[in-house]
Image (cartoon, rainbow, N blue to C red; front, side, top):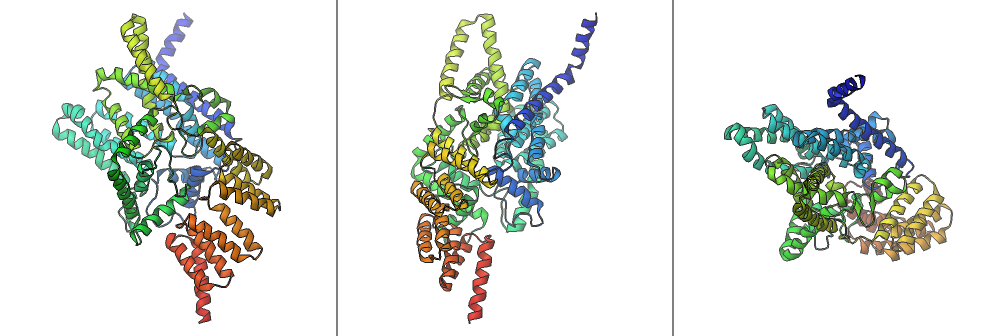
Length: 620
């Protein structure tokens, strides 16, 4: 009797108990993972994009604030991070903790979406998979836009289904607000807006009629615009420039579609691969090509124009590149864009159990084939799943227009998980019914998809990735002053990939700190030999010559750097300061003027220029 009452109570409370357990399980897993990776040296000293976001957040919180120019990247995450960083008294650990608290809500949202679209069983298993899914754990703990974007995208699709069930004006307004907010996180999501016209015509119009359906669409568009408009106004106010959200779109379009594009890499041969260097050189190249100063929107337009010209000259290459990007989206390997996600396995036993890249790129290499099966099975009720199709297709189109990597496809994974579970359930039905014909056909298609998703289409040198991993770890150790640990990591880096210039350069910096100037010079020369385009070893060699009062030798080294990177503002600043020390004031003035032309925001160059002008005026 008591047992019966227990199960009755359990059933009565399951509406809130199941979601609560899902949330607690997801949060627990994320807390475990967060504490496991806290030993990674880049945890407290982030590098690459995490470092960039942290620097932006600190700048937002400073009295100075961000520069008076249109946003280069969508601004939502830096401002979000600034608020959280301020609340946590600039604790990187607790900032990450708040982010995983939000990330733990995702399985909960997926559970409710599964209830709306499928059934309780599918909703539960989808949420359970999302709780354990390794890339969610990884990105929820990373100081990147990815986790927030996944959450916003899932909220948006859930709200759109609420509109479909209860088509009141307020529901459409809420959907528009979420669309606008997601657009401020990653503007490519806004392409969903035009795709929603199909949904309005096929689903909403039969419910409301033409007039109210169009009004509903207008409410979505207007609400989204209300969210985005303050950013547009701010961009125009500070830069007198019509930049809708951010101006990097043209340059990113070129990165993803130029003749040498890989379809996944966020770099262009010959252009500085760092975010700061790429930012400055994208402006400098455009301005030099057009022979005038440009607004930021004009810089973006230049790169769009250059890309379209290359496409016009070689349309076949463009078409094959788009096909490759589609295959990269389907491929199970977690393509890096910031750090190699597989590095986390060395520090987290939890991730090492949940993700691997051997004969099977697990889990995405299994998830995508199953999701495509589920997608095919769902077509019988296409009206019910139309919003899922529209979000998937619009988002994949944006990936193909730019480039594909692991973190960019993350917002679609919640939907793919649901479809994969649906596909598994359909396979189980075939087995239960002993439907050999359909089961055999489905397994054949699945096998073909599995092969497609689990071979090395990107052609990435794994030794290079390992070299980059050790270089990033070494850089974090170097920033912390742990020289021996840094040296070990940099030595591992060049062992895996002897052509890794940055690691040779950093070994030189360690030698300098230990007073071994000769050894440092040898490392800097090795770095230049490994990659003549990397500028830092030139600067370090030149600095060594300057310290020995050998200014002419320093200039010769800097001129080599200028030949390699003629649009780098720091090269001209360094040349100018060296010429100044030689007493060649007029030449120094010209060099620093060029530095400022390439990067007007370079405060060091501006101060140096003012000093030279003051000295020239005094001489007159």
